[in-house]
Length: 169
Image 1 (cartoon, helix red, strand yellow):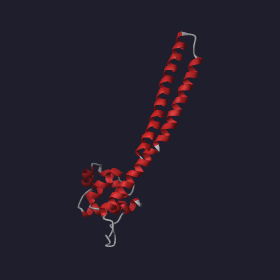
Image 2: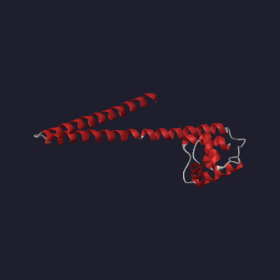
Image 3: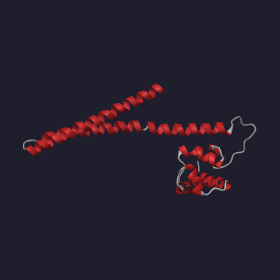
């Protein structure tokens, strides 16, 4: 995908519909600066906005992502709507893959929290003696227990999420 080409295509179709950037932005519930960024090729529309944008511009999703209008050949057995449905499904699949990558990060974060909790428990054993030192030791133990519990919760959450995902498939 060429962002500049897509941006030029959005500009062309918007102007064909006699819309300003601000009018298109209002219809899509985004700022006119966002539309400007699309048209300049600085960024792409969010996947949740692609379908509404295509409807406003009266183009298919594949036309938008290709940055040009496609001639509907008579030999083609796919309609623009089925092509659009395929592209929408592909975009949603990519978003799901991004979410799936978050699980390993969750494991790492949880393990780090557990290690920090254990380290705080060890630090708390260093303190002791005076009332203030006993207070610090108790404070570190309390924080350590909280951090360990949060870490364990995150680990169990990641495991159960993976199990639930596996059952859905």
